[in-house]
Amino acid sequence: MQYNFLLGGLYCKSFKTQAITNVISCQEEKMENRPKKKLLVLVREAIYRKHYSKRTEEAYIHWIKRYIFFHNKRHPLEMGRAGIEAFLTYLAVNRRVSASTQNQAFSALSLLYRDVFNEDSDFPIDSAHASVCFPVVKPSTCINMHGHLS
Image (cartoon, rainbow, N blue to C red):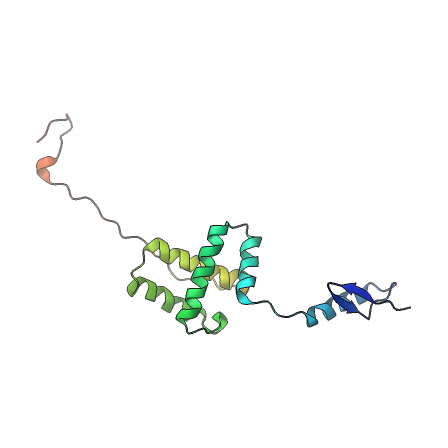
């Protein structure tokens, strides 16, 4: 005896009440008819699964869009590590962004490749570091151990 069930807006014709295995084929039938999700929707879902804040989501989406537009709207899977390095180099050299901004862009791109595309590459790209400036102390203003000016 066959029944037609409505699952997720699609009728599954192969479902039998006695056979559990047909539930799987019913789900596969549903998956085949579903349109593919857009890239930024997948990114938003990955961010949601990680419980990131709304502002982090906005920033990551911004950096991923800039990355795609930097490479003339090519799909990120076509670019890989070389594309990431070229984009981060462009940010550092041409746009002269700070180290923390570069790291934020890199974090967004690593989320894209690691959590959306499920690529297991470790991204051995070094993170940007802020330059350290040490204060210059003139000898005439040094204080000795007793608190007197030298």
